[in-house]
Length: 261
Image (cartoon, rainbow, N blue to C red; front, top):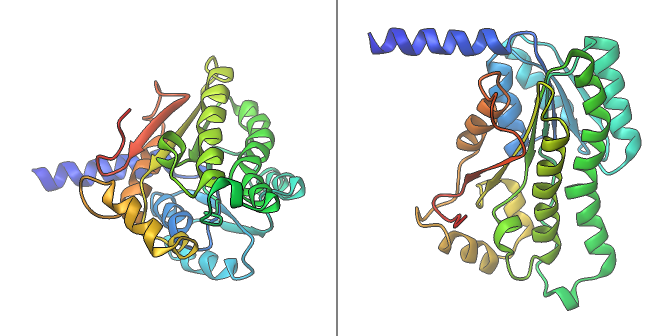
């Protein structure tokens, strides 16, 4: 009986995502790839976005799910990238249902007064400006059908502020603020805008941090481990679904108990 209910629920979820179009930024590898894989397995068509030239490899992997997959290689901080991706959505699918702003970088581990200004600008451009640009050009497409789900990937660092990571922490705090603002602006529509604040997740972004900084982040997690890609992808899946109907401008923690508010 339980297995039958599980099967029926999985079928219902797949039907609710079928023929929906999702854009996932930063989707060549890691968390973005995991999120794209989850959405594809549930029936979503996809547009993958990443600056890495090997993005086509991820596209080929996701074709196994039988959905349509397009990709665009570009920098999310470049306005041209957001415009071009929305043109693909319009020309090839004539719709946009889901946007997952996942692209982000960790930046240097340095004290604020030692951080080069151009490094702060680099982190800001990708982590916050990129989210702004994709939301800016995605929302008009969603408004045409009065439906959409936007999920922004922030970080627990955006709530608490990690030492030696002022650029990363402040830009992720900015993502939280942007999410709350846009969610309120669209509250009288059928577009929902939410963000998640993961603690450290086991992805390649850890390569950008010192081992000392990684240890600091893990020690802050009561569960005592990093998060896994699949755990985050499952939360993003729900926030991208029709079932997420009464939450908007909200922040969802997935922090292993680290979050204090």
